[in-house]
Image (tube, rainbow, N blue to C red; front, side, top):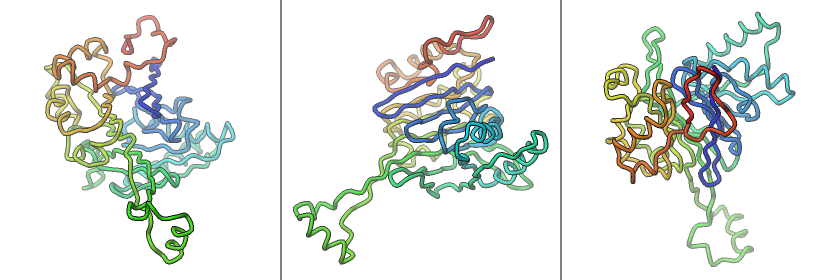
Length: 302
């Protein structure tokens, strides 16, 4: 069953991908040259150099080997995969095992990621990992938790007290070792992956990012227990979550195919009210035109 492709645009930020619970999740930000999760490594992911893996569940991580293989096949430079530290060894073994099957091990850059340790992608862009509330599995006695990521634009602005100085005066101050600029961080997109609500939603770079990609897997009223058991968010949890957030847009991802988008939208408006729900959208509501469901395929992109 082919997953529909969505395209969401807010300001100068464009997001492409698909996110359906248990099936596939990947969200590409082409202009930022990164993707949140890899899904099954659809073609939209192959053009970006940086993949930010939230956790190892198959619907988020199945395409790792294929991504690196296809990058080699189309003569792109090896990509970079950033993954929670406990998963790095297993990913490296996966690529070696696939080489035993395929005959070739594609070149790959695998990076270990820790919460709170920034990933520099370019001079004006960093990614800040953070721990979310989605325990995945135990390795011996260690509980491996999923990560979220915030893409943050970095600017250096002239300190106010130096605004009236001339260019040569500023150059002279720099020669003397005077710090004449201050660092400014602008959170662009925060991706929470699979998670229940948690304290990470109070992080400044999460709650103030221009776009927040927040999961909402369950919407039916009788599925709250299932949401709790799987460490997922239920639509009724948004009552408590939304007032904590300052994001310009909140984009809900990871909705199950069990619920049509039209029904989910009605439930969202009923839960939050039409005024508040204008700020919130389901990612798959923005499906690109031209993709029709196959015969017998549920239309979860209506």
